Image 1 (tube, rainbow, N blue to C red):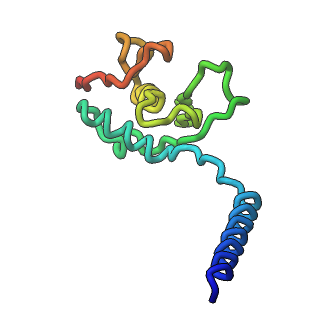
Image 2 (image 1 turned 135 degrees about the vertical axis):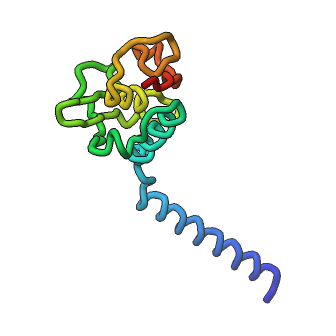
Image 3 (image 1 turned 120 degrees about the vertical axis):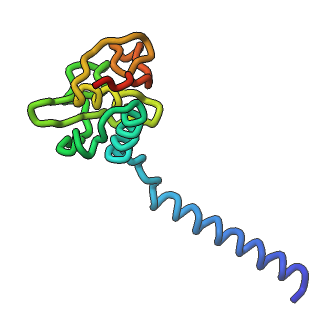
Length: 140
């Protein structure tokens, strides 16, 4: 094979590879970001409460259901989560359940009987801008 033939072969291969990549990129759109795993996020909140001496979720909150809140379900843009004691449902916006977002802990606090209040940085502080991940120590 002559040097000119070899260069032509490599150029053809590069063009073919570019065409394949273009087709793959345009026909297979990137997947939509999946919402967070509510069950995993709930377990993390449970662990954080249990570290402060609270009873385990498995014994006290075993019947709680977790749902994603949609904008249509919310009374305002500032609402990030909700606790329904009648049906034992915790609802969380999908953009409010990262590991460092205190919304799940806040709603779990309601499920455990806590009310709004506490200093800034507390998980039960209100409004959201004052909320943090500081969970009160359990006192019997």
